[in-house]
Structure formats: C-alpha cells, structure tokens
Image 1: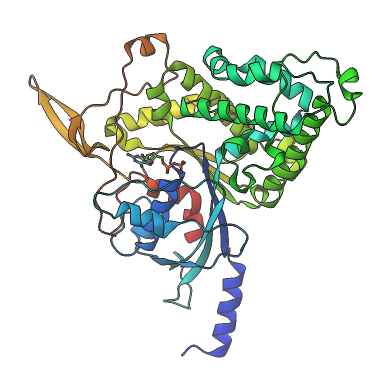
Image 2: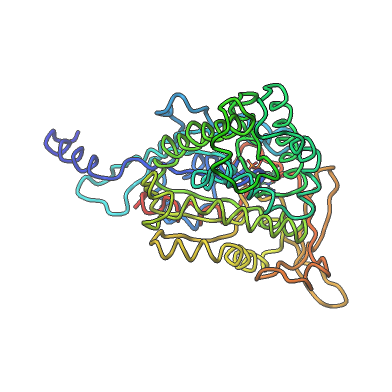
Length: 462
Ligand code: GDP
C-alpha cells in the first residue's frame, strides 16, 4: 500500500505530465487512411504482446504495456469502424476494409512505463490518444476562403488540362447556356450542379486529385443539400461591378450566394471545430499509384498536394494562421503502400515524396513546423524474395493479386526525383494491387509504421 502523502504527490506529478494527444490522419481518397488507422490501432492494442514495433523506443524497451479503446469525448463525430475493418482483414480470403467517407474518431488509452522512473517505482502512466481520420479532399477547399465566386469561376476553367477539360465537356455545355442575369431556376441549377459533381467524380475515377470543391466528392451528410448545388459559370467576363449589381434571384447572384454559404458554413467550421484542435498530423500520399497512372495524373497529384499543404503553412501571414491560429506541433508525410516495391527502392520512394513536396516542405521548415517524410506500408501484403537470373541475384516480391493468383515479380525502379520524359517514355513502373495478408487477429504485418508512431507520439511515451 502506498502512503497517502506519496499518492498525492504521485497524482500531482501525473497531472503535470502531458496526458492527451490529438492525432489526425489525412490523405486523398485511396491514399491508405483506413488501412493506416486500422493498423495503428491494431499495433498499439498488440503492443507488449506480439506486435513488432522496434523503431518505437517505448515498445523496444518493453515499456509499452498496452492500449484499449475507451469512449471518445466528442459524441457528435462518428466512431472509426475498427471492428468492421478487422473483420474484413480476417475473413477468408481477406479483403481490404471499406474506406471511411467523412471524419471519424477513436480514442485509445495507452498504458506505458515512463523511461525516467522516480521513487514511485513500478508505476505506469496513461496517455489518451484521440485519433481522427478525415478526407484530404476537404483541405483542398482552404484556398476557396481566399477567393470569391467570380475569381473561382474564372480560375477553374483556366487550370484544367486537356484531359480534364474533356471530362467537363457535358457540364460545360449545359452551364454555357445559362444567362448570368436571368432569373434562377432551382431545378435547372440542381441539374447542372449534378453534372458538375459528376465531372468531378469522373475526374477522380480517372486518377485526378486536384478537385474542388472537396465536399462534392465526399459530401458526408450533406448529400443532396442545396449548399452543394453550385458550380463555376464558364465564360464570365471580369466585370465585377456589373455582376454584383445583378438582382438576388439571378443565376449569378444565386450561385455566388451558395458559394459564400459553402465557404462560411462548410469550409470554415471544419477548420474551426476540428482542424484547429489537432496536435499532430500525418498526411498519407499514394505516390506509387500516381506513378503508375502516368504523367498528367502525377502532375495533378503534385498540384493537389501543393494546395493541400497550404493547410499546414503556419507562416504568420498565411491564410490559415490569420483565420484559425492552428497549433499542430509536428507533421509527418508518408508515401504509403511501400510493400508494392522491393526494399532497396524504399529510400528512393521517400526521396521522390520529398521532391514532390519540395516547395511546401521548404515553407513548413521556414515556418518552424517540424516535419518528417517517410515511406511505409500500413499492412504489408507482400514478402521479399530473391531471384537468380543468368547468375545475377536480385530482389523480388511475392504476393497474391486481388483475383487470388500467387505472383513473383519485380515491379520496377522508383525514380528518386521527379520523373522526366524519358521515365514516362520507358514506362518503367507497373504495380499490381495485392490482396491483404492472411492474419488470424494477431498483429498486422507492416513496414515502418513504428517509425511513424515514434515521430508522432514517441516523445509522449518517454
Ligand atoms: P482511404 O481511402 O485513404 O481510406 O484508403 P484505404 O485505406 O481504403 O486504401 C485504399 C486501397 O489501397 C486499399 O483498398 C488497398 O488496396 C490499398 N492499400 C492501402 N494500404 C496498403 C498497404 O499498406 N499495402 C498494400 N499493398 N495496399 C494498401
């Protein structure tokens, strides 16, 4: 039995420590958020048992005692469906979990032994880890706050490349018939807005990422709401005075009002109520997927990431700092699905990610936000093998395709800087999607998820 005085002192010391951490996971659709969060929760729940987390000192030193789910503090945010994800991964044959579509949350209570133990020897400490998952598409909307309907309308058409323009043709033909000064017809606007959303969805299906407004792709609970029934008007002249003078029930004024509503009621509240309160953040990027998809998509991913990263630009004069005073004190950027390439390619993958984000990373470092780039696989679906061909030994991957075929392959070399024309001409890279590994509820296999964990929460487990 501990003496009452000792217990009081102990409680006091405990309260003085950092007890809570809000960690957010984001990335564009299919970047691997659901897989990452599922694996993260899985690893921490198996910590101290069979999880392999050697790059996380608290685990390596045997100080990580375990984690359990507890009820989350914010009851209005949906819970991250961990059980459903694990059920998908443990069926026979296993399949990838359904991705989440909006924001979700899960709270873990982590028990660990502090590295520096005092005279209260043997005691453990707790860290409440609040995990959030939200679509990176929502961050593409930040720049909308710095613009207005007229400027946005004009910019959308200017920025689209030929393939994107082709996907927008149907919407553009319908929208071009509208007279900005005519009285708005609700049904007509709803129909053209649906064309616009369809064009965005088609662009996403085709592998494009730089798509606005983000909620048109992932509406969450706003599906069908009038606030999502707007679109840019093509061919607007830069004649703000005349346009602003149009009556409130005109096409132009109606669309401009909806755009403002979207800014104020959709974009701002996300930053104010959620984003601003995150302590740490990891941004996941499917670099290999973009590499697979060719030059226009790769360029588009670069553009989307540049936009997305503006949400982490804490420079004093940045839009974000002026509006929301965020407080993220550490950021990780990870190229996911590294198990699609052989291990000697992993440093090249990280180098390519850094090249892709060179400009935003420079700004971040300038603004003093500690940031780390890495490559990882949340759930490793392949095994490394060696093949000998004409007396030369080289690494290869063994995995099972989504159709259940066992394959042995070398997927190609990852360029360690932005790919040039010669790379695209060679098309030196092709990867197959793999089925997740067979697991029986034990810790999921991963690559460097522990390195990400160390960066994101290692210091809180000291
Ligand atoms: P989200 O839309 O960002 O939540 O992305 P998901 O987590 O659903 O991942 C999209 C797809 O990428 C999955 O269905 C898998 O096919 C693949 N994927 C994600 N993580 C991994 C990984 O670590 N390894 C492999 N081989 N595939 C992955």
